Amino acid sequence: MEFDFDVMVLGLGPVGLVTAVGFAELGHRVLGVDIQVEKVNALKQGKVPFYEPGVEPALQKHLREHRIAFDHDAAPWIPRAEVIFVCVGTPTKPSGEADLSAVRSVVEEVRRHAHGYTLVVEKSTVPVLTARWMEQEFQKVADHDIEVASNPEFLREGSALHDFLHPDRIVLGVRSSRAEHILRNLYRGIETEFLVTDIETAEIIKHASNAFLAMKISFINMIADLCEKTDADVVDVARGMGLDPRIGPSFLRAGLGFGGSCFPKDIRAFQHIGQTLQLDFELLTSILRINEQRIHRFVQHFEEVLGDLKGRTLALLGLSFKPNTDDIREAPSLKVIQALRARGARLHLHDPVAIPNVQKLFPESPPDLIYFEDPYEAIRDADGLGIITEWDLYQTLDLPRVKSLLKRPVVVDGRNIFDPETMLNLGFVYRGMGRGRWLRKKS
Ligand SMILES: NC(=O)c1ccc[n+]([C@@H]2O[C@H](COP(=O)([O-])OP(=O)(O)OC[C@H]3O[C@@H](n4cnc5c(N)ncnc54)[C@H](O)[C@@H]3O)[C@@H](O)[C@H]2O)c1
Image 1 (cartoon, rainbow, N blue to C red):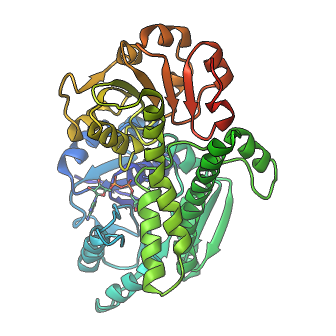
Image 2 (tube, rainbow, N blue to C red):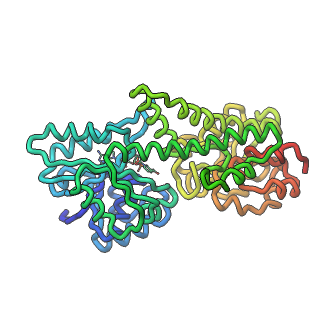
Image 3 (cartoon, rainbow, N blue to C red):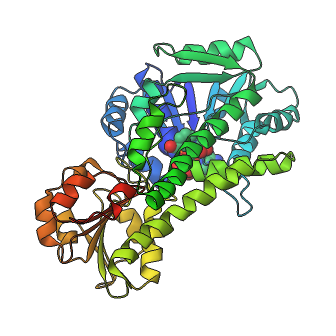
Protein backbone atom coordinates (compact mmCIF):
# COMPACT_ATOMS: atom_id res chain seq x y z
CA MET A 1 0.00 0.00 0.00
CA GLU A 2 1.28 3.46 -0.90
CA PHE A 3 0.06 6.38 1.19
CA ASP A 4 1.55 9.79 1.97
CA PHE A 5 0.52 11.06 5.36
CA ASP A 6 1.02 14.02 7.72
CA VAL A 7 0.05 12.28 10.95
CA MET A 8 0.36 8.76 12.26
CA VAL A 9 -1.93 7.50 15.01
CA LEU A 10 -1.02 4.38 16.99
CA GLY A 11 -3.93 2.64 18.72
CA LEU A 12 -7.45 2.89 17.29
CA GLY A 13 -9.78 2.64 20.28
CA PRO A 14 -12.31 5.44 20.77
CA VAL A 15 -9.52 7.98 21.32
CA GLY A 16 -7.18 6.94 18.50
CA LEU A 17 -9.90 6.50 15.90
CA VAL A 18 -11.54 9.81 16.75
CA THR A 19 -8.12 11.50 16.70
CA ALA A 20 -7.44 9.99 13.27
CA VAL A 21 -10.84 10.94 11.86
CA GLY A 22 -10.64 14.34 13.58
CA PHE A 23 -7.31 15.21 11.96
CA ALA A 24 -8.71 14.06 8.60
CA GLU A 25 -11.65 16.43 9.19
CA LEU A 26 -9.09 19.19 9.68
CA GLY A 27 -7.71 18.41 6.22
CA HIS A 28 -4.69 16.25 7.10
CA ARG A 29 -3.77 12.88 5.66
CA VAL A 30 -3.78 10.35 8.45
CA LEU A 31 -2.42 6.85 8.85
CA GLY A 32 -3.99 4.85 11.66
CA VAL A 33 -2.35 1.71 13.03
CA ASP A 34 -3.70 -0.87 15.44
CA ILE A 35 -2.28 -4.30 16.22
CA GLN A 36 -5.76 -5.87 16.04
CA VAL A 37 -5.97 -7.09 12.46
CA GLU A 38 -9.74 -7.57 12.58
CA LYS A 39 -10.29 -4.02 13.79
CA VAL A 40 -8.06 -2.66 11.03
CA ASN A 41 -9.89 -4.70 8.37
CA ALA A 42 -13.25 -3.39 9.60
CA LEU A 43 -11.95 0.19 9.52
CA LYS A 44 -10.65 -0.26 5.98
CA GLN A 45 -14.24 -1.19 5.03
CA GLY A 46 -15.52 1.96 6.74
CA LYS A 47 -16.95 0.09 9.72
CA VAL A 48 -16.43 1.48 13.22
CA PRO A 49 -16.17 -1.43 15.67
CA PHE A 50 -17.88 0.45 18.51
CA TYR A 51 -20.86 2.78 18.83
CA GLU A 52 -19.84 6.43 18.59
CA PRO A 53 -22.25 8.86 16.91
CA GLY A 54 -21.00 10.57 13.73
CA VAL A 55 -17.68 8.76 13.40
CA GLU A 56 -18.68 6.17 10.80
CA PRO A 57 -19.97 8.59 8.13
CA ALA A 58 -16.92 10.80 8.60
CA LEU A 59 -14.61 7.78 8.33
CA GLN A 60 -16.31 6.62 5.13
CA LYS A 61 -15.99 10.10 3.58
CA HIS A 62 -12.27 10.27 4.35
CA LEU A 63 -11.67 6.74 3.05
CA ARG A 64 -13.35 7.70 -0.23
CA GLU A 65 -11.26 10.86 -0.43
CA HIS A 66 -8.04 8.98 0.41
CA ARG A 67 -7.40 11.17 3.43
CA ILE A 68 -7.21 8.26 5.84
CA ALA A 69 -5.68 4.77 5.65
CA PHE A 70 -5.12 1.92 8.09
CA ASP A 71 -2.59 -0.79 8.75
CA HIS A 72 -1.90 -3.31 11.51
CA ASP A 73 1.86 -2.93 11.25
CA ALA A 74 3.54 0.33 12.21
CA ALA A 75 7.10 -0.70 11.33
CA PRO A 76 7.16 0.17 7.61
CA TRP A 77 5.54 3.55 8.22
CA ILE A 78 7.47 4.85 11.22
CA PRO A 79 10.57 5.91 9.24
CA ARG A 80 8.34 8.19 7.15
CA ALA A 81 6.42 9.68 10.07
CA GLU A 82 7.10 13.18 11.34
CA VAL A 83 4.41 13.07 14.05
CA ILE A 84 3.18 9.96 15.85
CA PHE A 85 0.24 10.16 18.24
CA VAL A 86 0.29 7.45 20.88
CA CYS A 87 -3.33 6.50 21.64
CA VAL A 88 -2.89 2.98 23.01
CA GLY A 89 -4.69 1.81 26.13
CA THR A 90 -3.27 2.42 29.60
CA PRO A 91 -5.37 0.13 31.81
CA THR A 92 -4.93 -0.57 35.51
CA LYS A 93 -2.62 -3.21 36.94
CA PRO A 94 -3.89 -5.09 40.01
CA SER A 95 -1.74 -2.74 42.12
CA GLY A 96 -3.66 0.26 40.76
CA GLU A 97 -0.63 1.42 38.83
CA ALA A 98 -1.13 2.30 35.15
CA ASP A 99 -0.17 -0.60 32.90
CA LEU A 100 2.15 0.99 30.37
CA SER A 101 3.01 -2.18 28.47
CA ALA A 102 1.31 -0.97 25.26
CA VAL A 103 3.13 2.37 25.53
CA ARG A 104 6.35 0.46 26.09
CA SER A 105 5.90 -1.59 22.94
CA VAL A 106 5.21 1.57 20.93
CA VAL A 107 8.37 3.16 22.32
CA GLU A 108 10.28 0.04 21.32
CA GLU A 109 8.93 0.15 17.77
CA VAL A 110 9.67 3.84 17.37
CA ARG A 111 13.18 3.32 18.75
CA ARG A 112 13.80 0.59 16.22
CA HIS A 113 12.34 2.22 13.13
CA ALA A 114 12.39 6.02 13.47
CA HIS A 115 14.39 7.83 10.87
CA GLY A 116 15.14 11.55 11.01
CA TYR A 117 13.17 13.96 13.19
CA THR A 118 10.17 12.25 14.79
CA LEU A 119 7.76 13.83 17.26
CA VAL A 120 6.14 11.24 19.51
CA VAL A 121 3.01 12.68 21.14
CA GLU A 122 1.40 11.14 24.22
CA LYS A 123 -2.36 11.32 23.82
CA SER A 124 -3.01 8.29 26.00
CA THR A 125 -3.52 9.20 29.63
CA VAL A 126 -0.22 8.41 31.33
CA PRO A 127 1.29 9.07 34.75
CA VAL A 128 3.42 12.14 35.14
CA LEU A 129 7.09 11.41 34.30
CA THR A 130 6.16 8.91 31.57
CA ALA A 131 7.51 11.27 28.91
CA ARG A 132 10.77 11.60 30.84
CA TRP A 133 11.13 7.84 30.81
CA MET A 134 10.33 7.78 27.06
CA GLU A 135 13.00 10.40 26.45
CA GLN A 136 15.54 8.27 28.30
CA GLU A 137 14.60 5.28 26.16
CA PHE A 138 14.99 7.27 22.96
CA GLN A 139 18.34 8.63 24.10
CA LYS A 140 19.68 5.07 24.00
CA VAL A 141 19.40 5.18 20.20
CA ALA A 142 22.56 6.40 18.52
CA ASP A 143 22.06 9.64 16.53
CA HIS A 144 18.45 9.76 17.57
CA ASP A 145 16.30 12.73 16.62
CA ILE A 146 13.15 11.69 18.46
CA GLU A 147 11.29 14.26 20.51
CA VAL A 148 8.44 13.67 22.96
CA ALA A 149 5.40 15.88 23.60
CA SER A 150 2.21 15.54 25.61
CA ASN A 151 -1.21 16.40 24.23
CA PRO A 152 -3.78 14.91 26.61
CA GLU A 153 -7.23 14.16 25.26
CA PHE A 154 -10.40 15.39 26.96
CA LEU A 155 -13.04 14.01 24.59
CA ARG A 156 -16.08 12.27 26.03
CA GLU A 157 -17.37 9.04 24.56
CA GLY A 158 -20.82 9.61 23.09
CA SER A 159 -19.84 13.02 21.69
CA ALA A 160 -16.21 12.22 20.93
CA LEU A 161 -15.80 13.63 17.42
CA HIS A 162 -17.64 16.81 18.32
CA ASP A 163 -15.46 17.18 21.42
CA PHE A 164 -12.27 16.62 19.40
CA LEU A 165 -13.24 19.35 16.93
CA HIS A 166 -14.67 21.75 19.53
CA PRO A 167 -12.52 21.31 22.62
CA ASP A 168 -12.63 23.58 25.67
CA ARG A 169 -8.86 23.76 25.47
CA ILE A 170 -5.89 22.15 23.80
CA VAL A 171 -3.03 21.40 26.13
CA LEU A 172 0.40 21.15 24.53
CA GLY A 173 3.22 19.93 26.75
CA VAL A 174 6.39 20.56 24.77
CA ARG A 175 10.14 20.94 25.20
CA SER A 176 10.80 22.90 21.99
CA SER A 177 9.24 25.54 19.77
CA ARG A 178 9.59 23.08 16.90
CA ALA A 179 7.25 20.63 18.63
CA GLU A 180 4.84 23.46 19.51
CA HIS A 181 4.82 24.67 15.93
CA ILE A 182 4.11 21.20 14.52
CA LEU A 183 1.25 20.61 16.95
CA ARG A 184 -0.32 24.05 16.52
CA ASN A 185 -0.19 23.53 12.80
CA LEU A 186 -2.00 20.21 13.07
CA TYR A 187 -4.79 21.80 15.09
CA ARG A 188 -5.08 24.79 12.73
CA GLY A 189 -8.73 25.51 12.19
CA ILE A 190 -9.80 24.78 15.76
CA GLU A 191 -10.69 27.89 17.69
CA THR A 192 -10.02 27.39 21.34
CA GLU A 193 -7.60 28.29 24.07
CA PHE A 194 -4.16 26.71 23.58
CA LEU A 195 -2.27 26.10 26.79
CA VAL A 196 1.39 25.56 26.02
CA THR A 197 3.34 24.23 28.96
CA ASP A 198 6.03 21.76 29.94
CA ILE A 199 5.35 18.06 29.50
CA GLU A 200 5.06 17.14 33.18
CA THR A 201 2.44 19.86 33.72
CA ALA A 202 0.45 18.61 30.73
CA GLU A 203 0.54 15.05 32.06
CA ILE A 204 -0.71 16.22 35.45
CA ILE A 205 -3.48 18.38 33.92
CA LYS A 206 -5.16 15.27 32.53
CA HIS A 207 -5.07 13.19 35.71
CA ALA A 208 -5.97 16.17 37.88
CA SER A 209 -8.94 17.07 35.67
CA ASN A 210 -10.39 13.57 35.79
CA ALA A 211 -9.82 13.24 39.53
CA PHE A 212 -11.49 16.60 40.11
CA LEU A 213 -14.55 15.72 38.04
CA ALA A 214 -14.87 12.38 39.83
CA MET A 215 -14.52 14.22 43.13
CA LYS A 216 -17.50 16.44 42.24
CA ILE A 217 -19.59 13.35 41.52
CA SER A 218 -18.59 11.60 44.73
CA PHE A 219 -19.10 14.80 46.69
CA ILE A 220 -22.70 15.19 45.57
CA ASN A 221 -23.28 11.48 46.15
CA MET A 222 -22.06 11.88 49.72
CA ILE A 223 -24.58 14.71 50.07
CA ALA A 224 -27.24 12.48 48.49
CA ASP A 225 -26.93 10.07 51.41
CA LEU A 226 -27.28 12.97 53.84
CA CYS A 227 -30.43 14.13 52.00
CA GLU A 228 -31.99 10.67 52.28
CA LYS A 229 -31.42 10.66 56.05
CA THR A 230 -32.82 14.16 56.53
CA ASP A 231 -35.77 14.23 54.08
CA ALA A 232 -33.99 16.78 51.90
CA ASP A 233 -33.66 16.81 48.11
CA VAL A 234 -30.18 16.51 46.59
CA VAL A 235 -31.37 17.90 43.25
CA ASP A 236 -32.22 21.20 44.92
CA VAL A 237 -29.02 21.11 46.99
CA ALA A 238 -27.02 20.67 43.78
CA ARG A 239 -28.92 23.50 42.12
CA GLY A 240 -28.32 25.75 45.10
CA MET A 241 -24.62 24.92 45.11
CA GLY A 242 -24.20 25.11 41.35
CA LEU A 243 -25.59 28.64 41.11
CA ASP A 244 -22.39 29.76 42.81
CA PRO A 245 -20.07 30.44 39.86
CA ARG A 246 -17.14 29.26 41.97
CA ILE A 247 -18.76 25.82 42.08
CA GLY A 248 -20.73 25.60 38.82
CA PRO A 249 -23.60 23.23 38.07
CA SER A 250 -21.87 20.50 36.06
CA PHE A 251 -20.98 17.09 37.47
CA LEU A 252 -23.24 17.62 40.46
CA ARG A 253 -25.76 15.00 39.49
CA ALA A 254 -26.30 12.47 42.25
CA GLY A 255 -26.93 8.88 41.27
CA LEU A 256 -25.24 5.56 40.74
CA GLY A 257 -21.81 7.14 40.42
CA PHE A 258 -19.17 7.10 37.72
CA GLY A 259 -17.77 4.25 35.66
CA GLY A 260 -16.17 4.01 32.25
CA SER A 261 -12.69 3.42 31.01
CA CYS A 262 -11.24 6.64 32.43
CA PHE A 263 -12.33 7.92 35.84
CA PRO A 264 -11.85 4.76 37.94
CA LYS A 265 -8.57 3.78 36.32
CA ASP A 266 -7.17 7.30 36.20
CA ILE A 267 -7.89 7.85 39.87
CA ARG A 268 -6.22 4.57 40.77
CA ALA A 269 -3.20 5.51 38.68
CA PHE A 270 -3.13 8.96 40.29
CA GLN A 271 -3.32 7.35 43.74
CA HIS A 272 -0.37 5.20 42.82
CA ILE A 273 1.63 8.24 41.73
CA GLY A 274 0.90 9.81 45.11
CA GLN A 275 2.10 6.69 46.91
CA THR A 276 5.25 6.46 44.82
CA LEU A 277 6.11 10.07 45.58
CA GLN A 278 5.05 9.71 49.24
CA LEU A 279 2.27 12.26 49.03
CA ASP A 280 -0.99 12.24 50.96
CA PHE A 281 -3.56 11.47 48.26
CA GLU A 282 -6.17 10.10 50.73
CA LEU A 283 -8.83 12.30 49.14
CA LEU A 284 -8.72 10.03 46.09
CA THR A 285 -9.41 6.96 48.24
CA SER A 286 -12.62 8.56 49.51
CA ILE A 287 -13.73 9.39 45.96
CA LEU A 288 -13.50 5.73 44.99
CA ARG A 289 -15.03 4.47 48.23
CA ILE A 290 -18.09 6.73 47.95
CA ASN A 291 -18.48 5.63 44.35
CA GLU A 292 -18.42 1.94 45.29
CA GLN A 293 -21.13 2.51 47.89
CA ARG A 294 -23.57 3.81 45.30
CA ILE A 295 -24.22 0.31 44.01
CA HIS A 296 -25.06 -0.85 47.51
CA ARG A 297 -27.42 2.07 48.09
CA PHE A 298 -29.23 1.41 44.81
CA VAL A 299 -29.76 -2.27 45.72
CA GLN A 300 -30.86 -1.28 49.23
CA HIS A 301 -33.62 0.87 47.77
CA PHE A 302 -35.12 -2.21 46.14
CA GLU A 303 -34.73 -4.20 49.36
CA GLU A 304 -36.37 -1.50 51.46
CA VAL A 305 -39.44 -1.62 49.25
CA LEU A 306 -39.59 -5.27 48.18
CA GLY A 307 -37.88 -7.04 51.09
CA ASP A 308 -35.97 -10.20 50.17
CA LEU A 309 -35.13 -10.02 46.47
CA LYS A 310 -34.84 -13.77 45.99
CA GLY A 311 -37.10 -14.80 43.12
CA ARG A 312 -38.16 -11.20 42.42
CA THR A 313 -37.99 -10.02 38.82
CA LEU A 314 -36.36 -6.64 38.29
CA ALA A 315 -36.16 -4.77 34.99
CA LEU A 316 -32.94 -2.80 34.59
CA LEU A 317 -32.74 -0.13 31.90
CA GLY A 318 -29.36 1.06 30.63
CA LEU A 319 -26.17 -1.00 30.65
CA SER A 320 -23.52 1.23 29.04
CA PHE A 321 -21.49 3.33 31.48
CA LYS A 322 -23.23 6.42 30.15
CA PRO A 323 -25.66 7.26 27.34
CA ASN A 324 -24.69 7.31 23.63
CA THR A 325 -21.99 4.68 23.86
CA ASP A 326 -21.83 0.90 23.93
CA ASP A 327 -18.80 1.04 26.22
CA ILE A 328 -19.35 -1.02 29.36
CA ARG A 329 -15.86 -0.77 30.85
CA GLU A 330 -16.31 -0.41 34.63
CA ALA A 331 -20.00 0.35 34.04
CA PRO A 332 -22.09 0.52 37.25
CA SER A 333 -24.57 -1.84 35.53
CA LEU A 334 -22.11 -4.73 35.80
CA LYS A 335 -21.82 -4.37 39.57
CA VAL A 336 -25.57 -3.91 39.95
CA ILE A 337 -26.18 -7.10 37.95
CA GLN A 338 -23.71 -9.00 40.16
CA ALA A 339 -25.17 -7.65 43.39
CA LEU A 340 -28.78 -8.36 42.44
CA ARG A 341 -28.00 -11.84 41.13
CA ALA A 342 -26.16 -12.62 44.35
CA ARG A 343 -29.44 -11.85 46.14
CA GLY A 344 -31.34 -14.25 43.91
CA ALA A 345 -33.16 -11.64 41.83
CA ARG A 346 -34.18 -12.42 38.25
CA LEU A 347 -33.15 -9.74 35.82
CA HIS A 348 -34.70 -8.35 32.66
CA LEU A 349 -32.08 -6.19 30.93
CA HIS A 350 -32.35 -3.55 28.23
CA ASP A 351 -29.97 -1.16 26.52
CA PRO A 352 -30.25 0.42 23.05
CA VAL A 353 -26.72 -0.61 21.98
CA ALA A 354 -24.67 -2.24 24.76
CA ILE A 355 -26.39 -5.64 25.05
CA PRO A 356 -23.88 -7.53 22.83
CA ASN A 357 -21.02 -6.34 25.05
CA VAL A 358 -22.78 -7.24 28.31
CA GLN A 359 -23.82 -10.64 26.96
CA LYS A 360 -20.16 -11.58 26.67
CA LEU A 361 -19.84 -11.20 30.45
CA PHE A 362 -23.32 -12.34 31.46
CA PRO A 363 -24.72 -14.80 28.93
CA GLU A 364 -28.49 -15.02 28.76
CA SER A 365 -29.88 -17.75 31.04
CA PRO A 366 -33.68 -17.66 31.27
CA PRO A 367 -35.50 -17.16 33.53
CA ASP A 368 -32.73 -15.65 35.69
CA LEU A 369 -31.22 -13.30 33.13
CA ILE A 370 -33.01 -12.22 29.97
CA TYR A 371 -32.14 -9.50 27.46
CA PHE A 372 -34.86 -7.52 25.72
CA GLU A 373 -34.85 -5.38 22.58
CA ASP A 374 -37.83 -3.37 23.76
CA PRO A 375 -37.76 -1.62 27.14
CA TYR A 376 -41.50 -2.16 27.63
CA GLU A 377 -41.07 -5.90 27.16
CA ALA A 378 -38.31 -5.86 29.78
CA ILE A 379 -40.66 -4.08 32.19
CA ARG A 380 -43.63 -6.40 31.62
CA ASP A 381 -44.50 -8.37 34.80
CA ALA A 382 -41.43 -7.18 36.72
CA ASP A 383 -41.63 -6.51 40.47
CA GLY A 384 -39.62 -3.35 40.04
CA LEU A 385 -37.85 -1.14 37.53
CA GLY A 386 -34.35 0.26 37.95
CA ILE A 387 -32.83 3.04 35.85
CA ILE A 388 -29.08 2.61 35.51
CA THR A 389 -28.11 4.72 32.49
CA GLU A 390 -29.92 7.92 31.56
CA TRP A 391 -30.46 7.28 27.84
CA ASP A 392 -32.93 9.82 26.32
CA LEU A 393 -35.14 6.88 25.41
CA TYR A 394 -35.87 6.22 29.08
CA GLN A 395 -36.55 9.85 29.90
CA THR A 396 -39.46 9.79 27.45
CA LEU A 397 -40.98 6.45 28.48
CA ASP A 398 -44.78 6.34 28.50
CA LEU A 399 -45.08 6.23 32.29
CA PRO A 400 -48.76 5.18 32.58
CA ARG A 401 -47.89 2.30 30.25
CA VAL A 402 -44.86 1.44 32.39
CA LYS A 403 -47.09 1.35 35.44
CA SER A 404 -49.65 -0.87 33.79
CA LEU A 405 -46.95 -3.33 32.69
CA LEU A 406 -45.21 -3.65 36.07
CA LYS A 407 -46.45 -6.28 38.50
CA ARG A 408 -45.63 -3.88 41.32
CA PRO A 409 -45.19 -0.18 40.52
CA VAL A 410 -41.75 0.14 42.09
CA VAL A 411 -39.18 2.41 40.42
CA VAL A 412 -35.64 2.93 41.69
CA ASP A 413 -34.25 5.76 39.62
CA GLY A 414 -30.46 5.44 39.77
CA ARG A 415 -30.00 8.57 37.66
CA ASN A 416 -32.81 10.81 38.94
CA ILE A 417 -34.32 11.13 35.48
CA PHE A 418 -37.94 11.26 36.64
CA ASP A 419 -39.79 13.96 38.52
CA PRO A 420 -40.68 12.46 41.93
CA GLU A 421 -43.95 14.33 42.23
CA THR A 422 -45.14 13.11 38.82
CA MET A 423 -44.14 9.56 39.71
CA LEU A 424 -45.97 9.63 43.04
CA ASN A 425 -49.07 11.16 41.41
CA LEU A 426 -49.05 8.36 38.86
CA GLY A 427 -49.09 5.87 41.73
CA PHE A 428 -45.53 4.62 41.59
CA VAL A 429 -43.50 3.70 44.65
CA TYR A 430 -40.66 5.95 43.55
CA ARG A 431 -37.14 6.20 44.88
CA GLY A 432 -34.50 8.47 43.44
CA MET A 433 -30.93 8.76 44.70
CA GLY A 434 -30.70 11.40 47.41
CA ARG A 435 -34.32 12.46 47.03
CA GLY A 436 -35.12 12.16 50.72
CA ARG A 437 -37.91 14.72 50.55
CA TRP A 438 -39.97 12.25 48.53
CA LEU A 439 -38.79 9.05 50.19
CA ARG A 440 -41.46 8.71 52.83
CA LYS A 441 -44.26 10.36 50.87
CA LYS A 442 -47.01 8.03 49.79
CA SER A 443 -48.61 8.22 46.36
N1 LIG B 1 -12.04 6.51 26.14
C1 LIG B 1 -12.07 7.78 26.51
O1 LIG B 1 -13.12 8.40 26.65
C2 LIG B 1 -10.77 8.51 26.76
C3 LIG B 1 -10.77 9.91 26.86
C4 LIG B 1 -9.57 10.57 27.05
C5 LIG B 1 -8.39 9.84 27.18
N2 LIG B 1 -8.41 8.48 27.10
C6 LIG B 1 -7.15 7.76 27.18
O2 LIG B 1 -6.74 7.45 25.85
C7 LIG B 1 -6.10 6.17 25.81
C8 LIG B 1 -6.81 5.26 24.84
O3 LIG B 1 -8.13 5.09 25.26
P1 LIG B 1 -9.15 4.16 24.47
O4 LIG B 1 -10.41 4.13 25.24
O5 LIG B 1 -9.19 4.58 23.03
O6 LIG B 1 -8.35 2.76 24.60
P2 LIG B 1 -8.66 1.30 24.04
O7 LIG B 1 -8.02 0.38 24.97
O8 LIG B 1 -10.12 1.18 23.70
O9 LIG B 1 -7.89 1.25 22.64
C9 LIG B 1 -6.52 1.16 22.54
C10 LIG B 1 -6.16 0.53 21.21
O10 LIG B 1 -4.72 0.47 21.12
C11 LIG B 1 -4.38 -0.72 20.44
N3 LIG B 1 -2.97 -1.05 20.67
C12 LIG B 1 -2.41 -1.63 21.76
N4 LIG B 1 -1.08 -1.75 21.60
C13 LIG B 1 -0.79 -1.21 20.39
C14 LIG B 1 0.41 -1.01 19.67
N5 LIG B 1 1.58 -1.40 20.15
N6 LIG B 1 0.35 -0.43 18.46
C15 LIG B 1 -0.85 -0.04 17.94
N7 LIG B 1 -2.02 -0.19 18.59
C16 LIG B 1 -2.00 -0.77 19.80
C17 LIG B 1 -5.37 -1.73 20.96
O11 LIG B 1 -5.47 -2.85 20.08
C18 LIG B 1 -6.65 -0.92 21.05
O12 LIG B 1 -7.42 -1.00 19.86
C19 LIG B 1 -6.10 5.66 27.25
O13 LIG B 1 -4.89 6.03 27.87
C20 LIG B 1 -7.25 6.42 27.87
O14 LIG B 1 -7.08 6.57 29.25
C21 LIG B 1 -9.57 7.81 26.88
